[in-house]
Amino acid sequence: MTGPFDGGRDGGRRDPDEPDGVRGIPRIPGQRAAADDLEPPAADVLRRALEGAARAAQAARESREREEPDEPDERDEQHGDAGTADEARVPEPDGVTGDAAWAVTDGVTGDTAPGTAHEPAHPPDPADPAEEPHMRAPAPEPAGPPPSHSVLKSLLGAWALAACSPEETTHVEDHLTECAPCADEALKLRDAVGLLQADRNLDLPPLLRSRVLENCLDRRAARIPVPVWATPYDAETARLDALLRDIGDAEWHAPLQLKWFEKEETTTRRATVAGVIGHLMTVDGLVASALGLDDPLGASAPQSPTDRTEALWRAAHSPPTRTIHEPWRDQSHTLIRTVSFAGRGVAELSVSYGEFALPLRDAMIDRAFECWIHGWDIANAVVYPYPAPSGPHLHAMINLATQLIPSTLAARRRAGLAAPAQQLVVPGSPGRSLHLEVEGAGGGDWYIALDSPAAVGSAERSVAQVALDDVEFCQLVAGHISPDEAAAGQDGDRDAIRDVLFAAASLSRL
Image 1 (cartoon, one colour):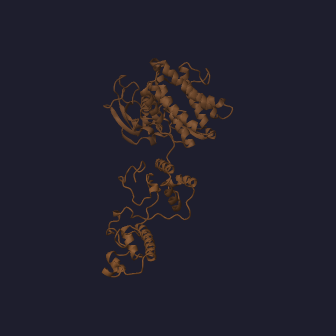
Image 2 (cartoon, one colour):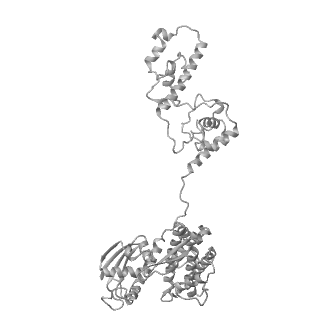
Image 3 (cartoon, one colour):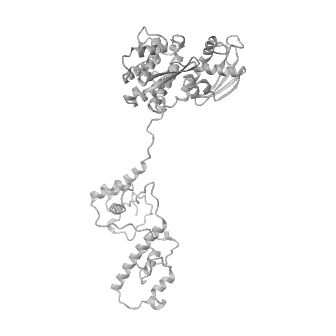
């Protein structure tokens, strides 16, 4: 039977035994089995086929005995007893005798070829079950009258999911050959089942936002683009904002430990999620003040990041709550808009951190780095997935840290915390260097001057080499791991290696 639903796979052939009343109705393929269902063993299929054929043969024999007179058969006169001849032709399966064996081997139940008494139209071939398309296990016969149309229609969904009982399945499939609207709906439901997938992680990919924005900007460039050096801050504040939107009210009071490296050892401070967001907002206020924007702590606020944070925490009459979220987010959006409209000249604007100052381009990368690190702290406290930044942004953060290590190393040397300089050179000339090899998406190779911040790192003057992972190096700079635990590979001057690792850890602060 061909039709729009079976794609004409039978080549236009029609079943000669098919009733005229159902011809032209689309054929519905068999019910799709569930993923964990197993096919019945071949022995069970054969047993059911033999039992069905035996019943059909027995019914045919009883019908002939009632209709035909009890007289010798021509076949008996020529070949002897009919049962003996049948047994000589085809071996009978267990439990099936006489005409039943013929019914099994020929795939015909009780019908005989025209002009031949009780014989199949052509000799059967038991070794080739595919010769006749009707050679298949009979469907279970339903008990009782079929359900109503409305009941069968309500079972279509369960039928598509292979959740019906055998009796219900038989009723539904018989109904589908007679009702075209139900057949059409059954096909749609079965196709829908194929679209169902297993459970998967509902967390959005970390780079989804950047890919969507990149695709949008490729189609229509922004009229006022965000400067390249400000994109890490834009990305990290957006990621942290998404995390904060997902957590509940109670999680804003989740305790966490802020860690940084101070006085040759790791220092910790207890805080809450809301307290950390307040800390980020107050330090971002240094950038806001440099741009002429309002400082969240007022005009008389201290310049040191640590002092600003302590002042905020002392001024709070009660622990901060999620109400700190909106002011922090509004301030970050304002900073991005301001630097975008300001143009290129604002990149070199000085941002004071009290004891030191950074150009605005470096200050924005520093703020992106701290936003990521503290976002990581918050994610660990509330058990939230929080991957590392993208490779280019991570590279920019590592590059800024390597630029700050020589001056930090010189300050430690003046405090007696590092080995003295060995070879002073003219400013701008190559000097003794350490080769820092950072692996990963944000990695690269850097040569750090050892004896003077004014010297230039050089591969030819390298006296030591250190290899680290990109995220591991950032954790060292943030003070989350100690210098003794950081280096994955070391080679060369041991004093130079120790001085650089401790100087990198000293870049951390509250």
